[in-house]
Amino acid sequence: MDCLVVVGGWTPDLLLPDADEPHVGSIDVDLALDAAKLDDGRYAELVKLLLDTKRYRVGEKDFQLVVEVDLRDGEKPVQVEVEFLAPKDVKLKKHKPKLLTDFRVLQIEACSEAFHNPV
Image (cartoon, rainbow, N blue to C red; front, side, top):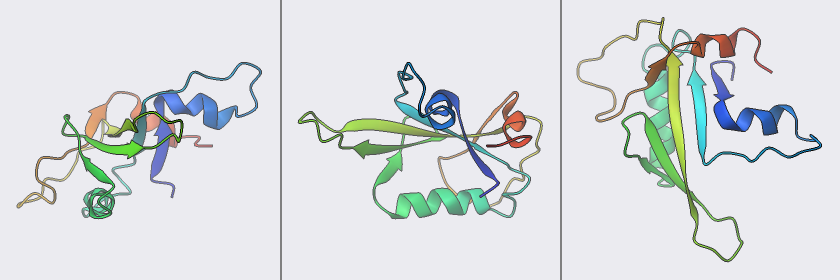
């Protein structure tokens, strides 16, 4: 899917899986969405599909879903936040009524760079 790119704290592990010194990882997953390719409510459909699995729930922030991950280490499952980001320079179309209540993507600077040379 060329309209979704993992960015943020997990990229070192994904790009350099055999690094001499392992990356410490991250407790959240940042997903950059190419809003230009996810028009006509496709990003809302993606989020709705995740919510419909009942594995994900809306997080504290309105651009975030949360999933419990059992690391099978005898400890409590870890709460992993999945954050949905989009380029700040893209004009997002407003829908009336909203496609998803209480949810939006977070538009940030430089997010569009992730789509120039995705690996």
